[in-house]
Image 1: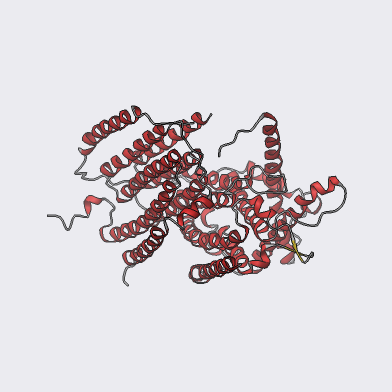
Image 2 (image 1 turned 180 degrees about the vertical axis):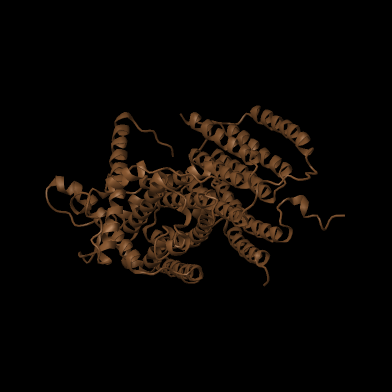
Length: 337
Length: 100
Length: 163
């Protein structure tokens, strides 16, 4: 149904959009700092230290550097698509934040098909990579783009199928309702999170989410040892920064989705004065999301890359049957109880 | 509220563009794309009538159209690859060995 | 307000569809088609079919068109080779005939007196669609799964160099 917003609602909505997108953009910038710092600690290096205390101003320095770098467009590239590709990559990645509930009321809009909306917009993100690689008119980017589009459609299947079990239990597609369905507890202590009901789905989701975001151990699209930098080899300056931002945005999106679907979203213990209680759900949510992001970064630092045939075999012959089996078992249990 | 006629006219225009594309274009992938345009035009009609009559079955049919479109794209593109391998060209006029 | 949205996205859909034909390179045609699909999906939302709108984007833009773009990139096609186009004259007959047909359809629909008053509220929610799909349309649903299976095998048979 199409609803109209009144004046005061419109202002509240605008404030929400500013808060969420401002926060997300800031967080994405600091994610690059976090990743560099964490990776460095794993590899016994100090990481960025020069700009500000603990290198905390590094993202700002990076941003300035990106702005002032020369914006190279290769001579034989396809100019229009070359410029469009980073935008095509970034916009869908940011769009998905419009339905993610950061707190009980901190959500821009709660679509009745919110989860599918996120899958729809993230599935558009593959065009940014594919077009960027094709428009560069160079061999490594093209190989990266072809690899990544094949990889992303393969793993999208198991990603989408892995959440079906959760949806059958929660009986909704709206992200806010998915969270509220997990609010109560078992025996008063154990939270009613879907991870306890759907452990297999969670593992499948986590693995295919890493593959969807093209990060190690599934970063065959950019694998720097073989393909220089894969699909964004020819990119520099702000366009490269947009690809980076899109990648981090996708990481945050899949982490937020994992939190919402399997770890109860913004639910958590409530205490303290009323003002604190307003902020607590968002704090819990961000805490859970950052655990996933830590996991992602540590995985990048520790796990070696898959070979391409291994990647395809793993996606089609392990993850897909697993998620299908999970759906069958879950539907039996749901039908009986 | 938008009258259903507008949707039908839009759908007719889109369908016509698809048909024209199917006749004009010679590249086999472009032909497949024209078919997709036609399927989408038909989908729009189905959904418009579904709202007009208050019946969900129109939307169900869109599902079946989607499935057929997916099957068509998969088989069609496999044929495209096979054809490109044999003829080094995607022009439908070039694959004329069975013609006399 | 809804009228403005309708005309805006209808214009995008028609423009993108024409662009599919106008472009020389198939990759641009495919991208243009994605734009058209998205515009049609927005029209689905205006028609209260939210679920279908999202599914349309996921299946078409997210899967089918990725396949097209993938094949176009894989074959690394040159610009549209026009060559000896034996059916060039078809354009000059086809477009006027098509426009004539369009005028015919539009005038017929324009004179149509639909009953706008009895429009029941219908929301294409996932639950309603699922309910209908798995009761009234169970057999067609199963048959489509068979169709998908056959298409799967067909694609493998055609594309594989030697079985």
